[in-house]
Length: 324
Image (cartoon, rainbow, N blue to C red; front, side, top):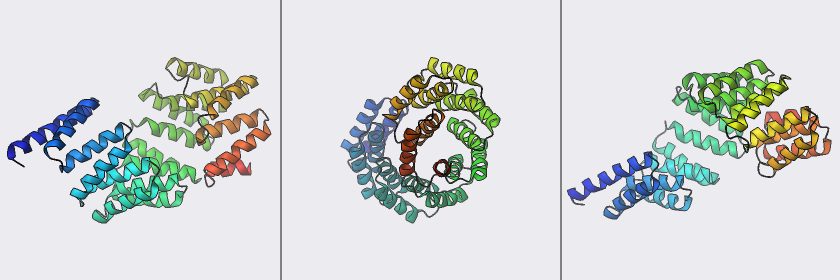
């Protein structure tokens, strides 16, 4: 390719990146496609076009772009990593692991490849294998807050609450602006029956982002556990004001509050509405189970528990509910 064309291609790629970063998807797509018209085997442009397709919900096109990039530069771990992530997001776990294992073959110290294999293992219910992979990733990059967050979650799911607490606190130390970790910490503390500290964790998260509905719902739930029903109600009113009236967690916690406030039918109507669309969410199912137990709806509680068991038979919280 002539030098002049090389400069044009590079400029188009840079333009595309600028558009991409600014959220101007159509302009970014046009820039990448123009670059590929000039140089059809430009692996960088192919990869970026794949990222754009993933963002736009076009997995088939994304796979074509990534696969083409990987054929052109088979030793480039970036392209294989993106291909592995794409397959993971499509729940194609075997294909995902195959691509990510190639990344590790090329770069034995590639920690992110292990992270995404671990996420696939977790999705398939292989939590111990997932945890082992993440422990290796964390050894390779001890300052990565994300690895510690996932290790904290897996420790929670496998019933090791002390380790879950340690990893999650360390994640917050490394990345105090990650709002999701405050919610995770709140869940762990609630599981440890330390409701006062859980309350503080959710409140700390809301100082970072007052509109975060997981923290808002988590705080309301914790207040219910503390018996502070009026405060819980105020938090849920605030959540609705901030646009959370349709958020499944907000509705579910609101239903749980109704069950403690003598509003049985409202509670049942709300939770059953949420379950029509969130029947595979363990967070929602846990709340629904507690609600049914509270309302002495034993048959429905048993049905929900069976659903949880089928979704996550080795989750420590599900096992505790089964034993209870």
